[in-house]
Structure formats: C-alpha cells, structure tokens
Amino acid sequence: MPQYDVASAHGRFQPLHLGHVEYLLAAKERCRFLHVGVTQFVRSRLAGGSVSAPHRALPESNPWTFYERRSMIREALVHEGVPAAEFDVIPFPVEDLAVLPEFLPTAVPVLTTIYEEWNREKVAMLRSVGYTVEVLWDDRPRVYSGTEVRRLVATGDARFEKMVPDATVRSIRSGGVHRWTTDAVTGRLPGAVEGRPPGSVGGPPDSAAGRTPGSSGEGDPA
Image (cartoon, rainbow, N blue to C red; front, side):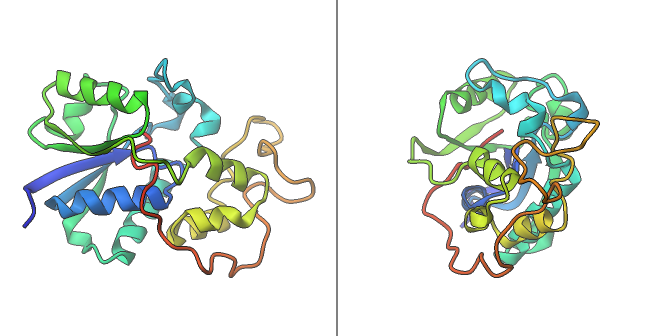
C-alpha cells in the first residue's frame, strides 16, 4: 500500500543512469503519483553550486537539456512498468528555494537519498522552507556515477552503456550530448576522440547487452 497519494523525487539526471532509475522506482513504490523534479533545468542560468559540491553548477556537468532529461525519464519509467498517468516530470529549482514552491507545493513530500554531504545540506534546505523530506536510504555504497558516465561518453567509451537505461543510450546515440562543449567556437567535446564527431561514441550497437540494474546507485544528484 503506497504511503502517500502524491510525492516527489528529484535530481539533475545528467544523464539518467541506473542508480537514478532504482531511486525513482523506490520513490514510486511510496506513492500513487510521483512528481519527478529536474534540477538545474535552465542550463543558461546555472546556479546554486554548493561548497561541498561546486561541480553541480558547472556547464560541463550539465550537458543535457531539460527536454532531453525529461524524455529519458519518461521513457525509462514507462519501460520499467510505471504507467505514464502515474508520474510527471517537472522543473525543480532546488538551487532557488524562493521559487521552488511555484513548481512543487510544500505540501508534497520530498523523497530523497543521501550519498554525500551535499545531500544532507539539501535535506536541511528543503525542510527549512516547509517540505516534509523522507530519506529512502543513507550512505549506501555508490555504484553508478553521473560524472563517470559523462567522462566515458566524452571520450567515446561505449562502457557507459552498461551504466544507463536504454532510453539514455538512445538519447546519446541520437546526438543528445552535442551541446556539451567547453569551446563555443569549435563545439568540441572535452576529451572527444580525434576524428569522431561530438556526441558520438564507439563500440558496437549491441554493446549494452548484459547490462543489469545494480542494487544501489547515485540516486540523488541534484
């Protein structure tokens, strides 16, 4: 029996990986309807880098648009059997608490996880503005890392496919990472393989075979 009629989960999802999927499914088990919040949703106005996690507000840490991340989340959750009518994907500006309630009322519980100090800071921040926050798990070993997925994609290493759902693979294969650049003139990805266009990755198309979700992951990288 779900604990809540409506609840929320959130993250940066840069990109969506298997740890995120595990977290979102655990959150959905707690409620009949789940709001999935996407942080740093306007990449031209990145803000709120924490002292304990300053990389979260850097352009190179946020290559995928809100639209792309929303598509990954929708496709992945439906693939996992969550009816489309039982969740939505919304902006979640945790980096600007003054406007966050305009996107998610404080009456909606926030379900989250803790892997590092930034997560603890965020729990305190959300509670300070009136949200009820439930921590689903605390201090599990981290199996999946968005930082590592981004590094593998940028260097053309197809091993990233074992760390993400098929929805993310399709987004990346279709060129969804082409906006990630440290050089607005050349459009070159950091660490991109010479002779390979930005957003492309090596390896055979079926290299994702054998990928299985882990028992834990980076569930809350907001």
